[in-house]
Image (cartoon, rainbow, N blue to C red; front, side, top):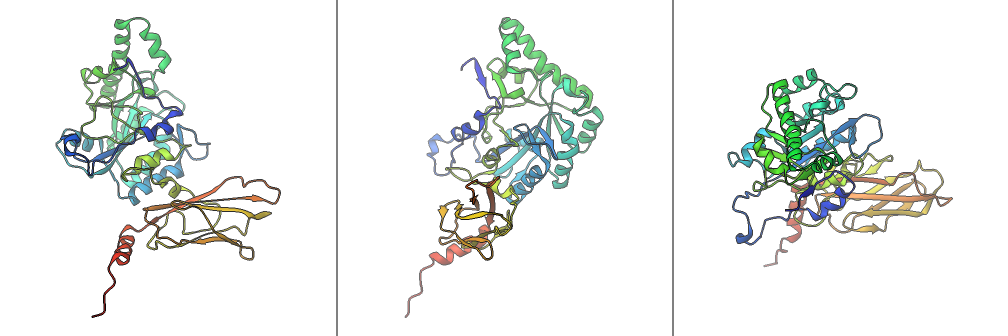
Length: 395
């Protein structure tokens, strides 16, 4: 094992998702399937800061998007489990749904209590807060002890996120002092945070979240030594029962890159993830089918009303539909309707549409139009059965 195992939350996370997608086990050679693997996959979602009106960043997500993500999890039929459920499943003591989600939030921003906490209460979703000692009662935007106690009383689980949330440069500085000094530093950061949180909030602290996802091989044995059952990285991927408890994968949900959420909630076999994030978009123009809508028709008419667009160049209009790429949509200058009748049954559970255009001066629209809708799987299945049934023969 190399000395450094950096699972950092940086720009590489999006591109690495494709590299770390876990293959489905259906149809695999029985001799290559881990006997401990029960087929369950848990997406651990990691969030940080929340806002109602500030610009989104990797670390900060808007309240309306977070709410739509929580709603979409419910619409997709994915079960949100508690940390207690996760523990029992990982230890082989409890069965959980094959598609499960564990919600975690790092650092301890006050915005979680003000914005995300009420939304999670509304959906009755359990969650875990990974707190670091120096930021508890840190003033300004930090969670306070009364806030945290209130949430613990309501069922929140707490995990440890170190003492000072050191950045990689701090780890490397300590490492240069020698093995003994480095291990002392690690034991303080990982161990004192656990002791502090247990004393302050009178609750067992059994999980650890590596700050920034930075991991070195010296940290791994300390997880168990210091009394943690599990430690989470920022390495994207779904958790299997057989995964190493000291370095579990986690999807860090970014405010400015929705595809990470797509990977987290997609449980399809192979290929690129379904574009679930398009279901979260709110188009600026009237669209059909409505954004996020569940429809039974696999041959719908897709349209957008662009009558409010000034100086539109009709010749520049383009519509792209998932599964079809660019499609021959038509524009009605009298109504401003840009539409296309789907000519091949939609088979995926969700469909994304992108519409672009330019004005008469050749300038593209300020923001590309993007939305998505879902197909009622039961209706689509019945529809498909009718298509594949043999035609009755005359006697």
